[in-house]
Image (cartoon, rainbow, N blue to C red; front, side, top):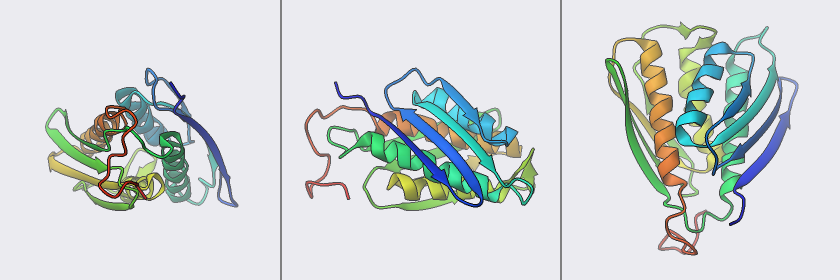
Length: 196
């Protein structure tokens, strides 16, 4: 079996990031973004998707959290895209619901090769720990672009913003686990014969 792994990096005047993924792992992780809440969400994503994620980011947090969150999403998505290769044999579509106490989130993903996102999480607070809630939404949007996937993430119900965010990341994790599985060995899951 071919290893579905990838490693990439990104260095700009705003961030320096190293990232690697293994799509067929136990979901252990080593995450250090400089943002405690983002680390917590990415650990949940790795653990529940079964994707080993290693990511180290040094960003311009003296400015704010935006560049680090956006660039971590771009680098992580690029790694997932590269690890999928030509996407032959994958399930392609994935959907999941995840609850966290009173909150319930839904994620639907299609590794179509066409980036698109629709994210509605209904946050009330301006921030969660050291992360602006608007940047949590932006994380999902940036991830969809770099994974070359269609991504819908919706809050079905919820009151606590921490619970809303964590339920959304867990729903994404479960949808990723399903969509990236090899279930059609040797077959391209597209009527066009390509996913691009």
